[in-house]
Image 1 (cartoon, one colour):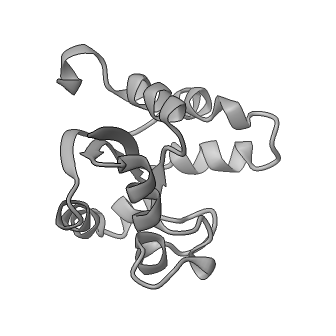
Image 2 (cartoon, rainbow, N blue to C red; image 1 turned 90 degrees about the vertical axis):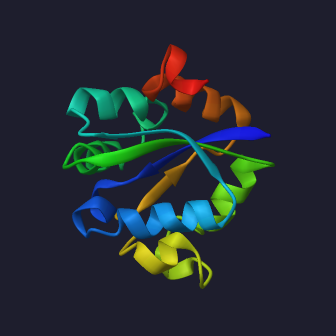
Length: 137
């Protein structure tokens, strides 16, 4: 089993599709090990996305991620990182495959409904950023 980190982003929460996304997560065989709804501050969003600080999209991304509540999750499944990324689809919903979450719920490359870790190391950092200690038994 492998664990990965996921976010149902503010745009999806605002559109009231978080429940549909959670249902897909479970129907695709993931076990939700931890889940919390949070509203990131600008500083928390900047800390989480610090790896992108020098990129031109950093300000817009952190503004968006702190614009409303989101749902952070720890998901578990065999090959969870790859499986979650496949279920999410391409970053740009216009380029995402039919049946993926971003194709179904994303509106643009900036408002694409979900986030997921891209590697084991990233998942470890991201899970640790949002879940501590006993939350991840």
